Amino acid sequence: MTTVQDQTPKQAESMYVPEPAKIVSMTKLTDMEMHYKLRLPEGRPLGHQPGQFVQVSLLGVGECPISICSSPTQGDTFELCIRRAGRVTERLHQLSEGDTIGIRGPMGHGFDVSEMHGKDIVIISGGLGMAPARSLVQYILDERSRFGRFFLLYGGRTPEELLFKEDVVRWRESDAVDFHVTVDRPDKGWRGKTGVVTTLFKELPKLDPAETQAVIIGPPIMFKFVVLEILSRRIPQSNIYCSLERQMKCGVGKCGHCQANNVYVCQDGPVFKYAQLKALRESVE
Ligand SMILES: Cc1cc2nc3c(=O)[nH]c(=O)nc-3n(C[C@H](O)[C@H](O)[C@H](O)COP(=O)(O)OP(=O)(O)OC[C@H]3O[C@@H](n4cnc5c(N)ncnc54)[C@H](O)[C@@H]3O)c2cc1C
Ligand code: FES
Image (cartoon, rainbow, N blue to C red; front, side, top):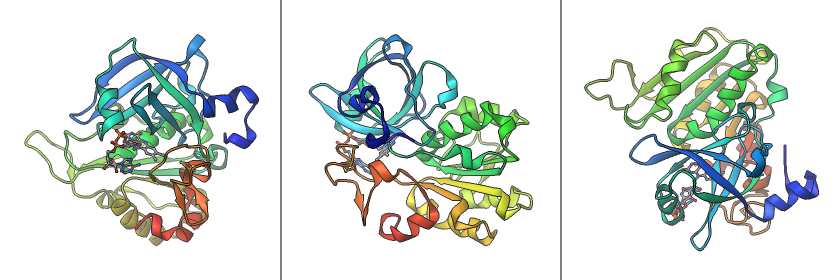
């Protein structure tokens, strides 16, 4: 994984100095979320791991952390899914294809994919958590032979709020992933499952706890209940990954904004093992 300490000088510079990235395409996913495909100068790869994030900046407006929602296996572009939340993200939604934004990173620790090789993978994702989850999902699908069975459980509040609907259709039809999706509040057109994401656990076959790696990415309330389901299946705490969101400023372990107990989420996370996260209990409650 890339942190300030273990980067080459050129990479380390990109942790502090924003690089221009051109917006190749912008697609509206929902009323709140926009999907961006971006390219660095000369098509240079971002060099990220699934689960990492970048600091996105607009000159004269500000900067904010955003998860990378595409896999490093997807070529010379990378993708972000940005929810309109405030000052910076509102302005990002007003941009157009061909415009340039600033990118610092990739930042933090993502998923240790090599530790997942050869294992069965269960990813449980909810809401905007599907953005970082999608990077790992794409990675597993692109490197499918390296993994065992692959289960993906996705929960959204409403059908409209589900992200990456084209992927959802593809995953539903794919033999490469055992995919299940549910919504809390269906609309008239919804033909799928209804209920919170934990109701999808009944779709899972018997898992071999030692051979299974579980990944939970979603809002804190979802995390609380999903982790109980996972632990009830006797999956060891060291086989459970979680991604944690904290308010951030610098992204490089200097300002302390993201500190939770004795860790800086921007550097030590955002991806943690559950065993580590238990010590940071206040962060998920
Ligand atoms: C590691 C990480 C990854 C993230 N990935 C994504 C992503 O993939 N897509 C995405 O849309 N957003 C993501 N976020 C959240 C995103 O950074 C915030 O929504 C953004 O900073 C808001 O900036 P703003 O200037 O638009 O809003 P502001 O004007 O700064 O704030 C708007 C409101 O959002 C609140 N807020 C700001 N940051 C956060 C936060 N981190 N958590 C909760 N509330 C916050 C503020 O308190 C305020 O109420 C991520 C955050 C982190 C830390
Ligand atoms: S955001 Fe500054 S220390 Fe983590």
